[in-house]
Amino acid sequence: MTQSIDHDLLFKELLTTFFWDFLALFAPEVLEAAERDSLTFLTQEVFNDLPGQARRNVDIVAKLRFRGQETCFLVHIENQATPQADFAARMFLYFARLYEKYRLPIYPIALFSYRSPQRPEPEIFLVAFPTKQILSNRIRLLLRSWRK
Image (cartoon, rainbow, N blue to C red):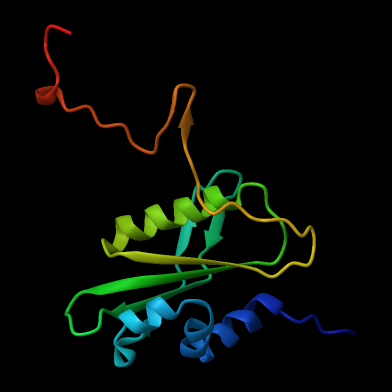
């Protein structure tokens, strides 16, 4: 009987083992901002009710302290081994839920490890209304003329 290899688990193990090296190569600005002795990997976060999915596990969430400060931030790394049309929306939802839970700045990193299709992935997730692009719409009544 052939034993299957859990590639996702191995990839997560590699990333956590070589976390600082990974940051040095792909996110040196995070490496510069972080206290090296403050690294803590948070338990695997599970979110329910994502569109089209009953449950999703966030791949890696690391908590770090800003250099010379008492405040912390999170690094969220998500490996994507297959193309997914709504991946940007999923990253946005993870971001929102992590922020809701921890109330800390979050540095999200998406790792695309599939060979094809070779295409640029969206850099941002945008919520649009027919007349404008919005994520949240603020109306400040006190700045508006009541006559208009």
